[in-house]
Amino acid sequence: MNFNKVLDNVPIYEAGKPIELVVREYGVNPKDIIKLASNENPYGTSPKVVSKIKEIVQSMSVYPDDSMYELKEALANKFDVESSNIIIGSGSDQILEFCVHAKCDKNSKVLMSKTTFAMYEIYGKQAGSTIIKTEDGEHNLKQFSSMYKEYGADIIFLCLPNNPLGECLDRDDVYAFLETINKDTLVIIDGAYQEYGAFKDEKKRINPKELINSFPNCIYLGTFSKAYALGGMRVGYGIAQEDIIKTLYKLRAPFNITTLTLAAAIEALKDEEFVQDCIAKNFEEMKRYEQYAREKGFDYIDSYTNFITLKFASLYSSKKVAQELLERGLIVRDLTGYGINAIRITIGSNDQNTKVFKLLDEVLEKLK
Ligand SMILES: *Cc1c(COP(=O)(O)O)cnc(C)c1O
Image 1: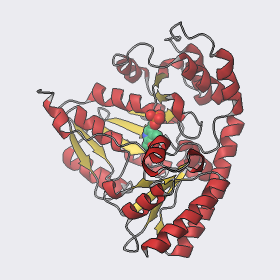
Image 2: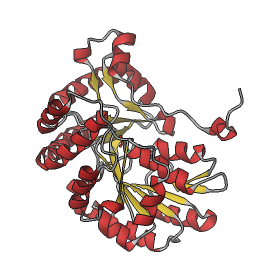
Image 3: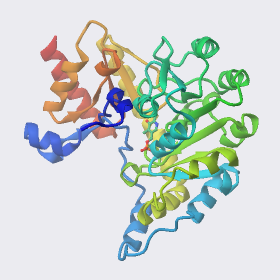
């Protein structure tokens, strides 16, 4: 059968392997499997959110509130913007998709860092657009500027902090860069890990209101999947000037967020203490990974997120390390597909991390 030709160039996104697969393929007891491949919150969902969901779960016969009034109000309050500046998506991924389809076609250009969130390229290619990447993996604004001057771009993606590497640009540098960008270029600031970056270093914090008021061609994206511990609920948001939001709405199907998801997100916003506590623990635990890497003599990228990228240089093959770990029930992300010999590990809970180091010791010894 013939399909839309642009799809010939679209790779299929490979999600982190699910626990069920490791049980099936390697016979590991589900209790012993540790999944640190998708940057989920290892401390589970806030108990307040869980009890709220249990309370409302009885009947699901009625469609959700498609205006999403309550969640938008809560977000508008949190960020001191208007509800009309907000769109809610089934994950912030869906809003990324809306943005690309709102702006791009086969004559468009999309600019991004060489090693960044894989979905940017996938959505760009779905639209048939040309993908332009900087030479460095980590965000390098000098390179962004020179590529922008040379080729132009309809969309620029900035992932702050960046997944899968973990680095983060300073806000002031981002703002100086944005000053030089044409107002018809949509700049997408992906803040999936902003809560972590801003916690670690104030210089990384992007205030969405300040951003969109100073740069009306920007959209800020946030998600409940990471720090807010709702990966299974699928909910994220975009904050932008009203004209952008209105256009994105044209691409949205009705009821794109479930009743349970809306309730979970609203409740999660009421429990900021849970979120801040998880983030604090995250960076305490991250120190153990840094220490471990130093002891073993391999490099890591200073991370502003809830994961760390360990680079093996010529010491080990990251692909082999990831496979050996998988067979022992530990799921991590091999970055070979991104062209680097490194693994990305989500920072787990204290117990999980202790097991990670034990398994890594075992695997590194075997592969030496
Ligand atoms: C996780 C992630 C997202 C969005 O995840 P959703 O679950 O779709 O909200 C967006 N960008 C980056 C860089 C991510 O890591």
